[in-house]
Length: 267
Image 1: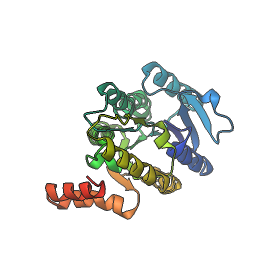
Image 2 (image 1 turned 135 degrees about the vertical axis):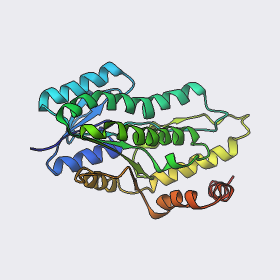
Image 3 (image 1 turned 90 degrees about the vertical axis):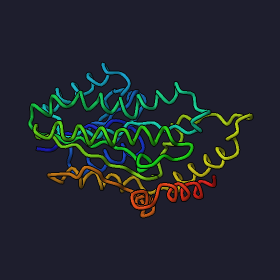
Image 4 (image 1 turned 90 degrees about the horizontal axis):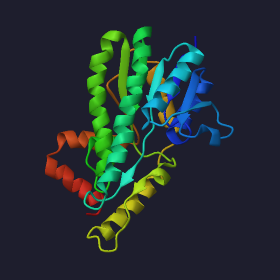
């Protein structure tokens, strides 16, 4: 029987690419969107789901299980970006990103676990970020949300293993998607001491996304993970230097690594 896959944030970007790829491989794929009725000619089914609304999550998961009788794979992909200096960024906006990227992902995991436990099988793939392995200037809150999800995954993976459920992280680098348009950008305040450096770094971030890799690379990586009986805890998908930056952080003295980042971001 074909595996049933649920992808949060499946209407665009990486989620859409992954869903389309898996559909072509014979999987039964459901994506999610807050307003699926506004999306036409989508390559796979969409259900309404808002990761910040527990009732919405429960309803969407129940709909998939009622239709298919099972749920084999959850790809926790929904997320949002945020940029700005820590000092200038409103704390309320920081909390919104944590609610989406961390607590939203946790609530979706909570919703699918009873079904997977009943099946004695299941796979949860949490899409994090290479940025989650380091504190990046003007992206510190985004890095923190993804780093937190990496750690939560390590913990829940051990908690559910005896039920036949596998959990893993996939950390992408920069890919050519529309993520920049969905970010919360802290305004460039005229009186901010970070004004010039923040603007320079915004331009750098957008350039990285525009010149990023093909999301099909993520789709291929996730397909391989689904086909792996015992997935690893962490996967990284991106160009060599993005992945190597994680290795450098492990082997270099903290201040040397910090200096490399500051030079890269022209600080």
